Length: 268
Ligand SMILES: O=C(O)c1ccccc1NCC(=O)[C@H](O)[C@H](O)COP(=O)(O)O
Image 1: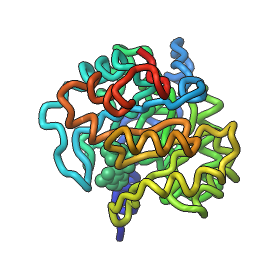
Image 2 (image 1 turned 135 degrees about the horizontal axis):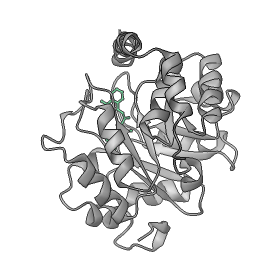
Image 3 (image 1 turned 45 degrees about the horizontal axis):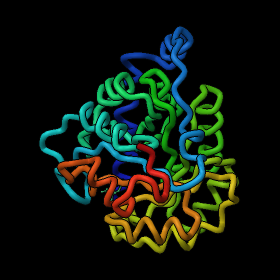
Image 4 (image 1 turned 180 degrees about the vertical axis):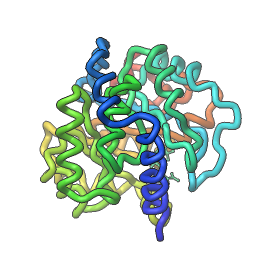
């Protein structure tokens, strides 16, 4: 069994436990009382130029513990001040040491959109994301059927959330587009082997029409990576480890952007 299937299986068990504490019906009822409308994830990334999505990630299966101290609210504020367009916040607890409360607190402390980064395997998780205040959810093609991607995307959109559909190869990009994705993320990391290849998102870029927001994910380390992705019409980049390991997030983002805050549109 590969790591993705293992995480998906563990997530199904976790969600069954959570449903025993609060049923889907109760969750839906609570959401109806919610007044706050989260900022648009799609809107934040659709602006011209390169958008930066910064990840809040304490640990990962491929890298182990990345951030022993994990002041997630402070980090989110630093990302926002440095010009990030959006944030990915890990909530998966067993493999990434994430938590729902991290997302809940971050949402209350920044105004840019936050995606709940978890391994969506049940519609329940989309209602949870809404309750937590997220702007978007992640749908990973490798652990879902095309019909599920379509159904979960529709549920998310009915709740006013965006769905980022993540793919790794031609078949999965096709699946994402068939399922009606408006936001496609291509992971440069093969989640079965952890091998990273930046050419992966460049190679698949032209499969998606221009009105689909196209994100390159994983393994982005410096300006040269960003420049090549930008020249190949990538709309946004997702950066995790490089930023999590840097001491000055503003300076790290400036360096990624080529030493300036203007070129490539990293907003101040
Ligand atoms: O990175 C892993 O170990 C991993 C394992 C299983 C599922 C997902 C995994 N990572 C998620 C990601 O792809 C990255 O967190 C994200 O794209 C950012 O990557 P990076 O900038 O390289 O930290």
